[in-house]
Image 1 (tube, rainbow, N blue to C red):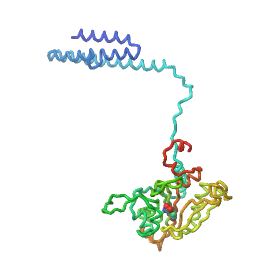
Image 2: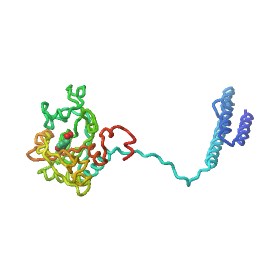
Image 3: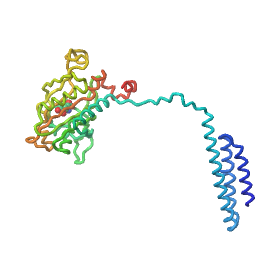
Image 4: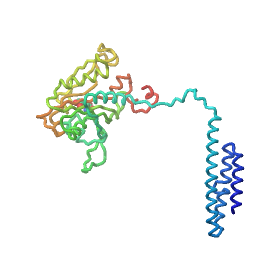
Length: 342
Ligand code: DAH
């Protein structure tokens, strides 16, 4: 038996000397080390020996197995090194250009506003896209019969909530997060909430069923209209340049009183009038106002002690103006020809 082992070893070493490439290396592996190779067969044949012989030769055979495997791995390593050298790599050649992804222009707007508002001490919150009718409308001072609900028709969900009520819908605005933020954090509060909203729209170049808003809310003692104006001015100057002016025109939103539309001087014509601002010199960008006392109450905040301001930007509209995009449907199209421009 010992002779057999020696012979196998000799044979292996001889063959190993002839190995100069991957093919012969593989042949060597098959012949000696594979499941049906010579070494395996040898180990099997040990079974036929009696116990003491088996113990004696078993040890030798195992040592041989380890030796052969080590020699094989060494050879494999030298072959790999030589192979790399033989490919003649030229390290001075320019590297590969890996294509980089692009941010959607809405994300760019969102990131810019998040940076600005966090520098002003705001938290950035996230909220559910699948909302309840209560948070999306009722708590925002829009009761079931209110005509403001007609303007924000949405996708109602045919599935009961945990109280077995059918009141789930896809949120039409980020404003319900005003209530959730007040309930969770109380006063004082400074938060922005960027997020995706949904409406039942007949889509065209200016209307889309899925779009993005950025809501803001500030609650504290003695918050007034001047605070709102200064926050909106800062945003305008940051987004559209230091010379940007703000004008606020009254507009009804049920959850603020007084409510207004914030408009900025057109960044393209500086207020002279052009195609972008439809020759008015002004761009309507943001809905805003002072938080309605009923909304404060719904948020669990005492309107006799605290007051608040709120605003809502349409991120799609901001991005369309900033990058001169003429079709709102491009944002969700996933079209790389569009996305790769940003
Ligand atoms: N949620 C409103 C909309 O979708 C925008 C808005 C208006 C938000 C006034 C506000 C606000 O916070 O005070 O049209």
